[in-house]
Structures are given as structure tokens and as C-alpha cells.
Length: 277
Ligand code: HPA
Image (cartoon, rainbow, N blue to C red; front, side):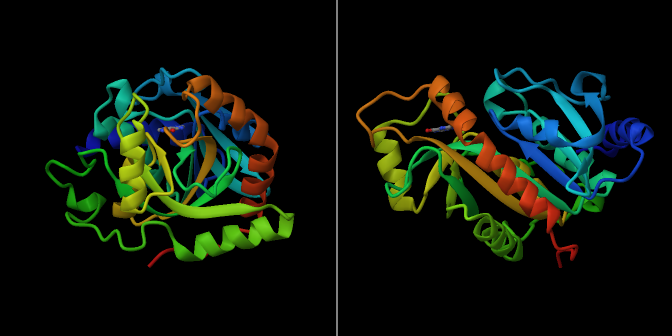
């Protein structure tokens, strides 16, 4: 990871920002609508930002939205970069590095995921308490730039416990039922086999997806606090007697949209200001 592209991207974004954001939002498949709730906003297309990759997946917009959400200054990624699209891990996590440079202290990462835990139902929201990196690679492989973080970062509390508790309290205050569990990341883009899902269940996974883990590793290395939320868009392969489809994923996220929006807005509005460490 060289510093020059990072500085150039950050400078470009900073020039357009009126007030410095402190909360970063990474919005997954079908969840980008949250960015539409941001007020007094500016948008910056990924394609205009120096060194930023471009988003290709259906349901992803490909822009940064910067402004106010529930009285807090936020920067939202409307659409993220996936490893399965062919981007390098460095590209996938580049926006997280930029967020750090912009002064972001807390990152809220969201995704659509398949439910492995059989007590879950499509449409559930799950707080990510921990993850399993099953991608077979790591975004920190390669020469380490010490000024960006440690060579061997601690991952023992990758998802900030205080933030998980804060999110649980936020859900309670809204009367919203939320699940909590372990997110497993595979590279995709094929969905899992039924046997793979059985394996992941015995590994301790509750939900499975194709994103989030690279960004969370980099956020941890960068000493940012992380909150992760999965929208359980379908039951994982082999649980129900039906095939999986991207359409089902999009349809379910559409259905839980209102709950998701209320939930994240409540979390942001009452977010404690304390920083990690
Ligand atoms: N598997 C992997 N990724 C996913 C799934 C799934 O079942 N649902 C949404 N993203």
C-alpha cells in the first residue's frame, strides 16, 4: 500500500467536504437507500476520485454521499467493491483507508448475507459479533506501511463490543428484534454448496456472505471502531428446499429496508463519541 494514491484520493474528497465526517457507512447490496436519507449532502462519484475503483455489481450505485444523518456528519459508500468482481484486496479496502485519512473513527459495515443459523429467518437483521475469514487471502498481505497500522494487528475484538451493545439497545428502543452472530466471508461469486454450509455451521458461522471481512480487517488495522450489520436475505444453501438467487437477495433486502433504515438511523443518532483504545 503506497501512500501517494491514498493522499490524492483524500485530497480530492476533502476539497468538496464542508464539515468533516466522523462516521463511515459501507452500504451493501440493496442497502444503499440509506444514503438517500443523508441531508445537506454532496455526492462524489467513484469514477471521479483519483485511484478509486468503479463499482460494477447490479444494485450498487458507485458514489460517496457525504452529509448529515440524524445530526451526525457521515460519509456513506453507496456500493462497495467485491473481491469476486476481480478487484485486488488493496482495491477492495482502499475506501476504508481513505475514510481513515478523512478522520473517520467509526465504521458501520452492512451487507446482505445467507442465514446459516437455522433459527434465523429471511428478513432478520443480524449484528455481527465476530467473523471468520474464509476468503483464503488477507488484505494486509504485502509490504506493510507502518504509518497506516501494525504489521500484525490484533483482531480479538474486531467488532467493537460497546458498539454491539449500543446497537442492541437501539434495537430495543425501537422494539426491533435483531439477531447476533458470526459472519463468514467466502470469495463467491458462486453461492455455497449445502455441504459447505454444513461445514461453516460446525465452524461456528451464523451467516455467510462475500464481503465485509476485508474492510473490517483494514478498519481494525487502522484503529477504527467497527459495527457490522447483516441483512439475512435468504437461508443459506441446503436449508430450504429451493435454489438461491440474487433476485431473492434483492427482494428480501427491499422488504426489510424500512427496519434497516430505522435501525441504522437510531444507532447513528445516539452513537457514543468515545474512540477505540
Ligand atoms: N451466500 C453468500 N453470499 C450471500 C448469500 C449466501 O447465501 N446471500 C447473500 N449474500
